[in-house]
Figure 1 (cartoon, rainbow, N blue to C red):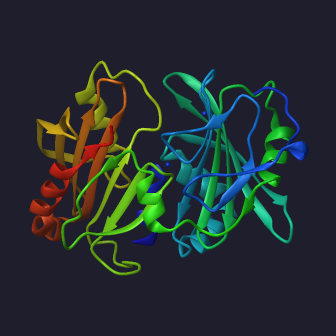
Figure 2: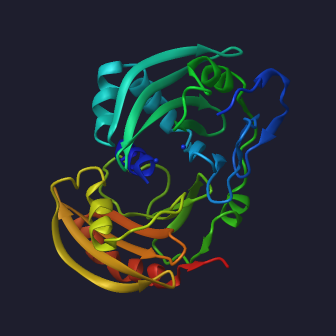
Figure 3: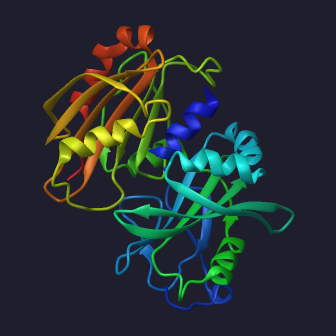
Length: 310
């Protein structure tokens, strides 16, 4: 379950010259990460990290349960394995290197990803604190923000005390009402909340989990129905799914789509609402098909409670 959930969370995970040594550390809201703000970037109001509005480059901070560190550390330590794993998310991994930090060697995955026909260079660094921390650089301009500057940026990162769950919930761009047996587990990247039906870790990988997240950037969706289908197919294990139902719905006070799909003995229920401003909010719940049939009404009730913050 841990492996499945980590990949699911990650799948739910964009500069001019500057001198990192002379810049003050900035606390990334809702996270344990402090790092200097690169020139041309500002703190994002839609995710945890920095955004360069001129070229859509970003530095995204994602925190996962501490228990995930061992698995991710092992994954990042094997080039062939990390290439296979990230390929499923459309990321071509070119190298994995270790960056010498103060008393720690941070593994850094280096690769690229095609997004809407544009090649985006990616650097993904892994850290261990009170949480498992991943910092991802999505770079549209590597001429001014080259490899050496990225590595210097990563080296400047400091990990401190993790933010409280209540503080992180307050930073979400939407509100919702949990329904038993779903309980709030964590908030990731200031954009996604996870709810589980179990305590700790479900090693079986069968028990239902639920996530609600908002898109981290604005874009146009000329064919939202196709986009919603592509989103559910991006779930780990649902690449060759069978859609059992799909319909237009009102979700998160927006026009949207509900899709129910099955694959390999599991069921996924997904709601996606598309706003007029070009963002979307997505709810997805996944688990063993028999278990999902028991909580479907609760999933629908949570979906009805999702409201964007004004």
